[in-house]
Length: 322
Image (tube, rainbow, N blue to C red; front, side, top):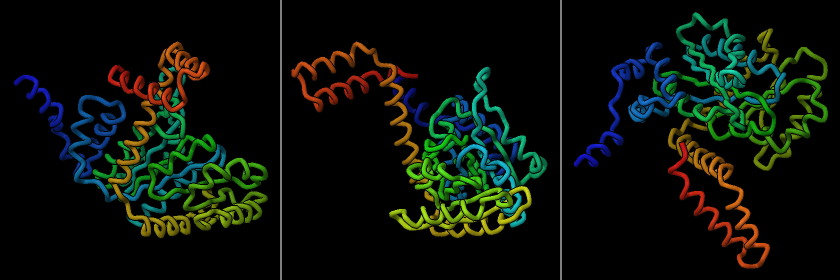
């Protein structure tokens, strides 16, 4: 009986008393919920279970691209445009982690300070904590919290580390890839990565030289994609130039790609499984892997058999991981 009671408690965690406030859009409850899911506290499971039926409202827009393209300034200008359209916004700014505390450096929140007093905007900086792909491991859960709180649009800005940014494709409904003028050979560097996942391409800082040329380069490369070209826009975030057109383009793509919370959760589960397996593989003793490699080299085993044994070894160790 004790085991059954314990199982029920694990399956049906008691929701915190502030959960109704979260579902009503209260800022204090929203802040507590984000903290809970980011830090994976005891309340996190109850929060995530309590919001399941309230997902699927928000449009998730991901901004990514190489460092120096002005993503944060453009995101701030885009948020201002959304507010002019009377849409509520949540911003997930994934910052690099501090080497001392492991927390977010908060650079993006500083650059978006103009929205600090706006109740229709809630900005949260998350630490990447060394997670490759530019996204915090908990970013998808934070997006769900924003969604459940009634935000119309959730904007996700990634760290900006090049081709690893393709992870934004697994979490956003609309993906905006931001570039700076004068790309040159850099276009080739991103061709096989973030350029391929773009729904919209943007050349920011369009008041600088070579903006037109960069836009033509991106348009030409976009036309070569197997699934068709995408819009290429020019913006100047500091001057507000092109931002309304960007908001219109994002809304148009969003109408074609309706938010699907099940798909987002499915992708999250797949990513977490892969992440867990990668971590488990890195923690395996080298002697275990060497023994399998020696068996293959000596002809005592084939690759497929060794792979199966390695997979079984990984799975057997998973419950021991934190």
